[in-house]
Every structure is written in structure tokens, then in C-alpha cells.
Length: 167
Image 1: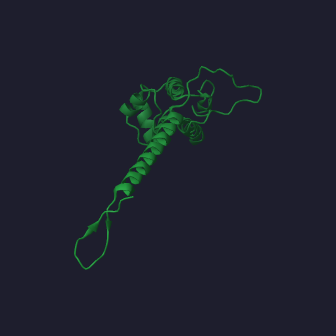
Image 2: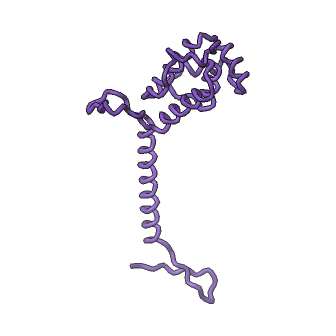
Image 3: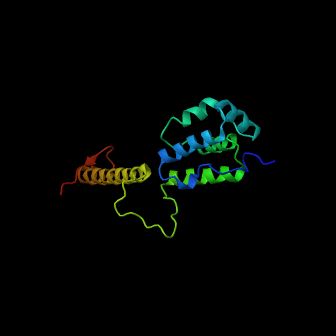
């Protein structure tokens, strides 16, 4: 007798996803493929050694953003797939989180004007780099201004005497 994890025909392929929304849609198809309710997924995940409240499973399928890695693993196991399949889902999630496109077949050529949205993470990295550059420029400009108007303290026998140096 074969189990559900052995019968993989019709099971969605996470490696084919290109965006966070496509990944979540594939998780939705996985739930439909499994035929399990959220409570069944919760109990099967628990039997596989994972903690996944049914409300968390339901909530992650209503969003368009990537769920946490451990949540994906628990969900996939709760849907009846084995550790190897869970690792494939986790790898696809990690790839999307890092903004790396899926590997394409050799016969496929990338489209020059793709309508596919670019991952948000690239914009986030560019925004952080721009903010860091502006912060560094501000620090440099502030230090240059301070060195032009700084008082110089001269040590002498008279206490607390300051001399201002003019250029």
C-alpha cells in the first residue's frame, strides 16, 4: 500500500515559483492537493514533530508574503509530504527570500522585457545602501564644519584660559 507522500502526481512544485505570491499560491494548491483541513494539517504536523497552529496555517495562505521557514516545513509535513519534499519547499522559500531567480531549463531563454515583478529585497538593499551613503556624507560634512570653528585649549599656568585661533 502506498502512502500519500509516495503518490506525488499533481503535487505543486515549489521550484517553479518566481515570486512570494506564487509561492503562497503553490502552498494553497498543496493544501488542496492534500485534501486535509487546517486542523488535520495541524495534527499531522504535530505527529511529524512540528508545531503549527491551524490558525497560523490558515493565516499564511491568506497573505501574499513569504511565511517563515519553520512554518513552511511544518505545513508541508502536515500536508503529508516527507522530509525530502519539505527540504525542497524550504530551499525554494530561501531562494525567494534571497531574491535569486529559479534555475531555468537550458532550452529556455530569458525574455528581454519580462513583466514579472522584481523582488522587493533588491530595492530594500539599494535603499539601505543609499541611506548609509547619505549618513556618511552628513557625518563628514558635520566634522568639517566643526574643525573650522573649534576652540583650541592651550595649557598654561592660568587655569581655564582658551585661545581662539583665526585663520
